[in-house]
Image (cartoon, rainbow, N blue to C red; front, side, top):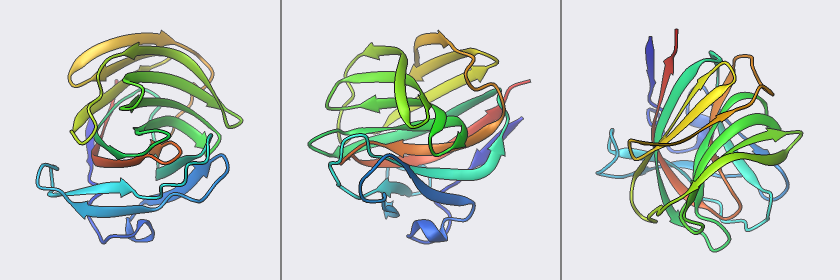
Amino acid sequence: MAVLICVLCGSARSAELPGFEAMQTGPGTPGRWETVVDAEAADGRAVVQTSDDPTDDRFPLLIRMATAPADVRVRTRIKPMAGSVDQAGGMALRLLDRNNYYLVRANALESNVRFYKVTAGRRVQLAGADLPVTAGAWHELAITAREDRFAVSFDGRELFTAVDETFRSPGKIAFWTKADSVTWFDRLDVEELR
């Protein structure tokens, strides 16, 4: 069963994005989530994390407050736009709270895609691939989670798989950025796997 979620409906501030709440892993200024016009976005608008606080280990989240099944395929499009420390964007899944979740992200400055588990606010890399991530361009990022197995795709190509059983229960899904990353997001597609 596919559930398509449009986070771009509503007005420009995160407090007015129905069903979503801004939170953060780590220190620093809270993230600022807004919508902007983008003709290349599916609905003509994108959600943007605009705060450029360069604090390391600062991870702004925009959390979809409805719980998603544990076994899902989640897909979004990201456009890294700015940042001198990082130009990263991604998705958290099986999120239990702001400090415990899985994370898939792409980084234009580092030219890579990585998969992490975050426990008690600390990231541990589980898998990754080095490849070009172009700043200022839209990229599709997707992850499939089934039991303890994960498959990550970037721009329609599967990059890698990983196995981990830290988080097995249903949880929330969120947009994620790092440090001073100004990153745009277009849609959030969630498909329950049966």
